[in-house]
Length: 333
Figure 1 (cartoon, rainbow, N blue to C red):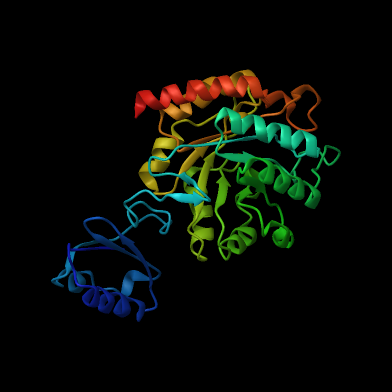
Figure 2: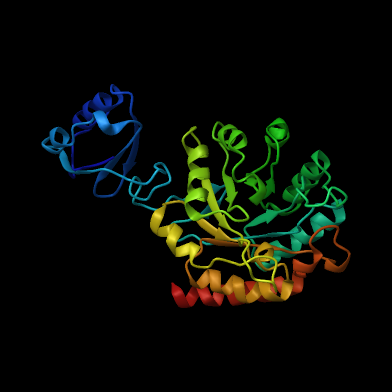
């Protein structure tokens, strides 16, 4: 249920209404806009008398929300959420470039790539320390050592970094990580999502391999309902009957997610296509349709990469792509 208050309501009257609603064991999500305040009620609202609330002189309108996702719902929070990572802002018109290798391999590799993508214009650095792989025989990442190397790259460049968490037990290792990523395989690991809802760090939540948009938003709900509202949604391609690329990038998901939710939406064309040459057109398409950011895999030596070399761009190619992305941004601005 959503309650829209009239403009210029006194804080005391607003607080009285909120306290009364909380007294009915309801959660109240408060969204203070420039011209109005929206109260989103979470819980069993069947006991709430809509006609009574609508009759209050401080209430402009009341309506029930049929969607099961509440905290991430734009109806509860009409204005775009802006996620801050240090000096970097994501969402609300702020565009973010995230780049780096699939896996952290060596200090030289990670620092070299970090410096290259920063020079190209990247705002955040990405790199996998823990790697969920389809085959148990593939490179699984450096683990804790990988996180330490990412910290070195941050010291060398000043770029905040994002890296994937796979297990709740690893949380202590992520205390100094700037953004925690939940990969496609863990999008519905609800125990992990609930635990991430109890920390005060931005979470980059990827869409599942065959997940619907509603399922993605419900996964975000698990995080947000536990207290952490710093969620960034990521479209990374879904599994379809297409047989020429790794996945199918669902470009339409970007404007639809923006319609449904106030959370920022970024796009990962690297995992969506699985081929470096397909990344540029998909990255520009994602930019044109309103994505709040693009995350791309970049490696200084893709042929010898320990993970996903085929979809990794070289620093030189990434630099050229950033210029094209910025040109698209200028057109749509």
